[in-house]
Length: 270
Ligand code: OOG
Ligand code: NI
Figure 1 (spheres, rainbow, N blue to C red):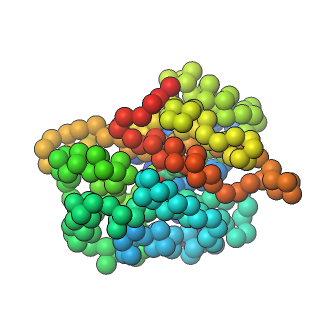
Figure 2 (cartoon, helix red, strand yellow; figure 1 turned 90 degrees about the vertical axis):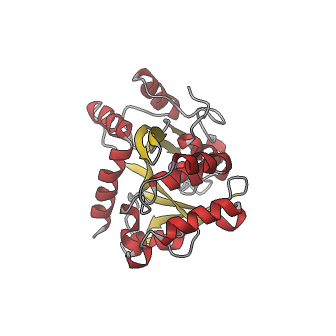
């Protein structure tokens, strides 16, 4: 699979988990825009069989290289971002992992049992992002208990290995100059914004401004019955030039910390 095929396949899978993203994407097309992606983001556990390095293999194989590293102490997360070596318009890839050894014994046991039945040893790591939940029907009781400790863990338990979000790159848009203008379009069309830490995360001084809509809720079949669970969301990003004139290409941890909350069960919205 080349890079474009990989990204296209990830997009096809992602819009099933984020129907709003497809609608917003179409909204931009209707306005005459061509939509470029600033980055796409994936989540995983730091189990060596599925960690960030394993998840990155699909991208390394089609021309990406590792760039920045980020730590989120309170959420017990670590992340790396990747950029394409030659295609400067290719989206960045942001992959995060939950640091299991920092989590409760209960959480570690649940993840261990999921991993044990995942059949991951027989999966090519390059295929992992397409596999989704590899541990059968989830338990709502377990989900709720994980939620108390880590929204991220609870989300992984339900959705497994997939793309968490794509991100519209605002800079090349013809009719929108700011995150604020994009947010207005989204709200005017009935989409709910993640307002945790403010609707716009980051500042021009930090060289990156971001916003996101709340994750779509999907009906998930649990052992105990069907419940609506936040799935995937769409993000919007505007980049600013550094002192050398080049656009800032990294991520801002304090902003990312709030962007993660777009999949929270309860999150401030606007
Ligand atoms: C990733 C959240 C961080 C960004 O652009 O800062 C992020 C996630 O929700 O998995 O995507
Ligand atoms: Ni993002």
